[in-house]
Amino acid sequence: MKNNVIKGSIFVALGASSYGMLAAFVKMAYQEGFTTAEVTLSQFSLGFAGLFVLNLFRKEKTPTPKTTTLKSTFRLILAGSSLGLTSTFYYLSVQYIPVGVGIVLLMQTVWMGIIVEMIVYKKLPGLCKIISVFIILSGTLLAVNLLQESVSINWKGFGWGIMAALSYTATMYSSNNIELHSPPLKRSLFMILGGLIVIAVIFHSAVNQHFSTAIFMRWGILLSVFGTILPPLLFTKGMPLTGMGLGAIIAAIEIPVSILTAYILLREPVTLLQWIGVVLILFAVVIMNMQKVKR
Image (cartoon, rainbow, N blue to C red; front, side, top):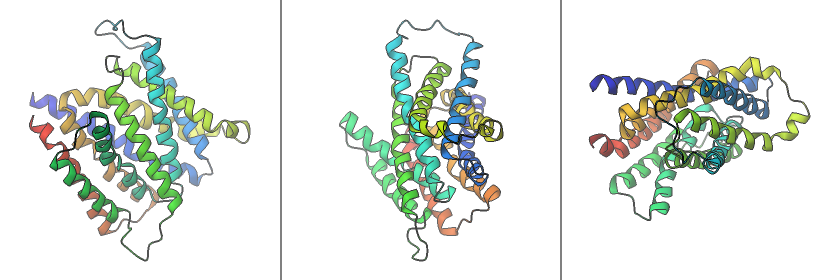
């Protein structure tokens, strides 16, 4: 039992770390002259192709439920549209703000998710969750440098970051509530397809104009592996072994990994106050999920 939890924790940590490195890779692609359209389209198209191949070789452990119909497939594709919007908004935000600020804004989905639960289930959150929200907001103020008068915030990047958090909240809700009976690889495939369709609709004009196919070999493979192929596989392997509470705590490693990757690869500075803010956010995630871990 203990070995399974350790194994699951490693899988979840690796999946979260994969997500955490994405923004730094995207910013490096921007430095080489590639656009958001090229980055997102290459990531999702190659990611969809990779998942499609993996689905072809997938072995059914149990028979596919009869409820997997055209309707359920459409529901997954529709749910995946928020995944495409999340990547688009997030990648647009890091054009204007540091990666460390972008990931902190994206993680506002933690308290946004509490509001969604409150609306959907018509139930007030417990005291621990309310305290956690205030800790997260306090940590965010520090992590994005809002308290320092000398720092000028790019509000365009800030706005895209909040939009990304809203989309990510929708993605998290759909991932935990829609068509859970479908095999994980199949769910990932159709959700990525939904994201790809949305991105193609948003950036269709860019494809007709100056789309550089060099992005596919230069950054597309890397982004698709770390952004759309590895994380679903690692999370679906690890989460059942850790449980949702411990899994959510470990997945929060995405924040420091993202900041450290940006510091190493992009030389983005991080102040002590920002690190304190990040630690507060991580602490809030732990508080929120400790009850689940105890269970």
